[in-house]
Length: 234
Image (cartoon, rainbow, N blue to C red; front, side, top):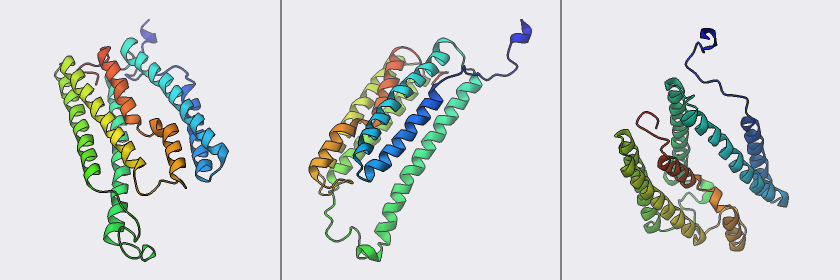
């Protein structure tokens, strides 16, 4: 039996259909998005169907990963470290993504192009006031603080306080999403749409896909209640 033991500390997964099918659904999202932005009617339905398929396939993939790590105990310390490193790189990519937004804003604010009248905001554009965005920013930062508090409670093996902190995080995230929706609906300018009716129609159908972070936190809340996390697996 000794020769059957693996000579490494990594987990070799079984053949899975999810990487290929998720890649195909992502391709559908890309093609559907491009067609939709070019005002093709087929593009909208391809985008929505691909996003729905992506959500279903990703759920199955996450289910398999949870089963491997929690119930089959296939995630060795090196595998856990690799998963943490992968999530850290994902957070880093999000930081750079938002950094590009701030960079673009500061570039236009400090050195507005001559094509927009050498002023920022451009002449004739009515901007959103600072009060509502400020409140929403505080709400978002507060949700990050409560999520960090839940993480600290988990490290200290305090499961119930971690659940309560994560519940507050979900409430704050839901408030943030609601304020964001209100802000977009009442904005004096539109996003890619030619009329407010099209904008509201677009929001009703695709708003749930715009803030997947809240859905992710809810799924982690369910896992926390089921006892999937402990001080060594978080």
